Image (cartoon, rainbow, N blue to C red):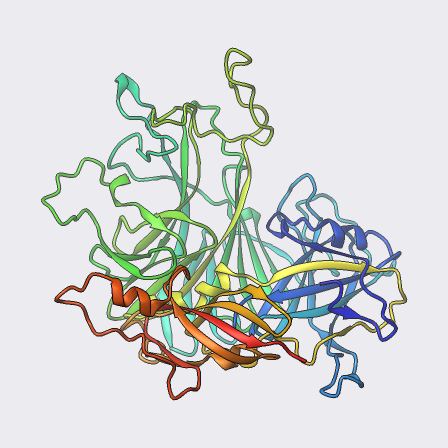
Amino acid sequence: MKNIFQTEDGVKFENVAYCQLRNESICELSQDATLDDSGHLYVILYNALAQPRNDFISLPVSSHAHYTVERSIKGLRQDFTTYNDNWQFAESSLLPNHFEGKKSSQFILVFEAHAIEPISMTLFRITKNNVSKEDEVEIDDKHSLRSPVVTNDSRSLHDQSFMVDNDEIEVHFDNCGLNRIFNKKLGLNASVRFEWGYYKSFDGRNHTQASGAYIFRPEVPNDDMTKITPVPSKTQIIPTSLLTEVHLKYEVSWLSTVVKIFKGKPYIDIDYIVGPINIDDGVGKEVVTRFYSDIKNKGFFYSDSNGREFVKRVRSKRSWNLQEFEPVAGNFYPVNTALYIEDDVASMSLLTDRSQGGSSLIDGTVELMVQRRIIHDDGRGVGEPMNETDSGMMPYPPYGDASRIGEGVKITGTHRLLYGLGKSGASLARSEMDNIFSPIHVFATTTSSSPDTDFFFMKKSASAIQKKLPSNIQLTTIKVLSVDQQTTTFLIRLSHGYGRGESDLLSSPVLINLADLFLYFEILSVKEKTLTGNRDLSEWLDTKMKWQNDLNSNHADIINGRYAIMINPMEIRTFEVQVQNAG
């Protein structure tokens, strides 16, 4: 990456660091670079998807200052001798950080990343401008949000309603938090709210099954969650030109949420911080968030299977005559990416940034379990309670007592909420699944050269592929298998992102020309492989067991010699492609 961007004189970046802990508001290089004015900060964004993206990037910074963010538009022209012009202004906002960690930054710089090309790297330059004495406002403590530099308007709300909107949606709040969403383009007005709570873990008394690492079992099988009440007097709204944040606090100190409404986006992001969960009362707690709506889903809900097919779930129903003993635990299912409910009028989809357990225990609701802290072992092999702490544990006997050290862990995460027309739950989820599963990767870098130094991209195109792929096609794998003096062999895996019937338009088969994936290479040969890439598909088809109900295979040869292939809904196809090396 250091070699991709350089100056006309050949100067390169001195170091490049991946900002892996941005969810904890930590990026040491960007934080160090903004402590003073001694260096210059650059950010490289990598888009791993095969489609262009518009997104908002959050970067931890250390100083209370004005920042100017610019995007590099300088690069080699087609003749490799002249250069495009330099920098383009990018809109940005500085916000207070709501995550209180030992190394977390005090501020978050949010900037707009517009039209980031597919499979590409894009360079941004960040210049720090100190705050004048007239503008400077002392921040009383880590909870204060009042500063004209941080936001144009920050206010505390108590016993009043307010509305936040953008071009796509209106989001209404009352003193308990979110209570209504209006979709401007669809004209859809919906009652939507969310609550937090926890199920009390069963302790396994009388030698019965306890809740633990492998078993979820509430203290009372059919008990509802213990609700955690918000504190309206601590609710704060922080509007900026790019997004509006609504900070919600609760009666327990170990829970907080930030609702984010971004400019031009049809969704709501709910960032949450959970932990350290208090277990001083001797009760394990399994924390969930539940979203309420007016949707009449009649016990039906849908969860994804490893991000591929959506599986229809029916509350308290199996394919056999079920005698139900655990109506809560027995209706939780794995949610890898998304969970949704729908009826003929409306649909509600909830996306996760990690695998969680989810359900719809009450019609009109979906819920996700985000964290568990349990003080009893479930006897299923781990040999200890599921009670993670931030400083580890003592050794096992005979060298120690295996006790936990430190506080319970603190976790952060994001749920993305979309609300739309009836029977569109899968389509809503699909529209954002790739974006939340593969966010833009952020790298920070610095240089000691002059701030007027222009770094440019050392390629004719910022994208690694010739054309963007359709929005329903995923470039799952592009891997170099072998290289020699004349040729390079790639493993290419393409997948269709929609299932049949999920979208009137995007659930259709798609014709893809493999040549569009290679910007600098000419294709010499293409072989279709099995999914894992270890056998030729034609060989496998010839030797596999033939069943009477086998359908005719769609895996035809290359169409008309154009290296064009058809990909059907939910299909994944794998190819070994040999190309001529560029001269």
